Image 1: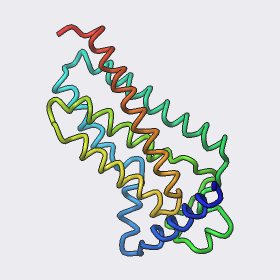
Image 2 (image 1 turned 135 degrees about the vertical axis):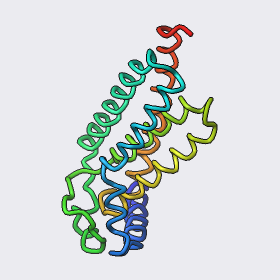
Image 3 (image 1 turned 120 degrees about the vertical axis):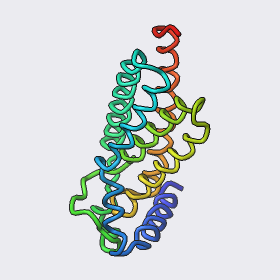
Image 4 (image 1 turned 180 degrees about the horizontal axis):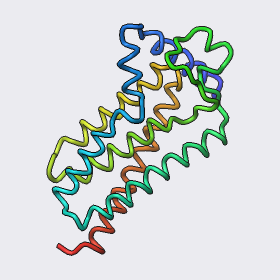
Length: 189
């Protein structure tokens, strides 16, 4: 059963990865860069500041720093624990795929980009939901695009992405609950 699931994962990866073309490679490399969306993160922090005030910013900054550290480190624990090769480094797969980046890395299960972007999107979307009702959906879509970029550039299988996004969504929700608790406890309206 596991072998069959892995084979489907490889086939879906090869299909999605080979949909790409040189025309679009630069765009997807920009999307997959961890520095591209810094302005978005700054905007989200500004919106949190504007809606919750200066006193709340310390809580937000601490919670977000803990959330990103948590998702990033748990991702590394899974990568080292499962030791699933990235498609760009796996014989039998790498010969049939498009490698868009120059660096491959060793292990890929599960995607740190997918988990971190989804955690940030869910957290910010839920915190800002009372003020911007549909923002959470836009941020989840953005996170999905970032996650797909990892397949496009040849770094992750679809299962790496789905598991990373699921873990990120759960983490984002948990840290949202933590932030709400801390705001209620320490910030008096």
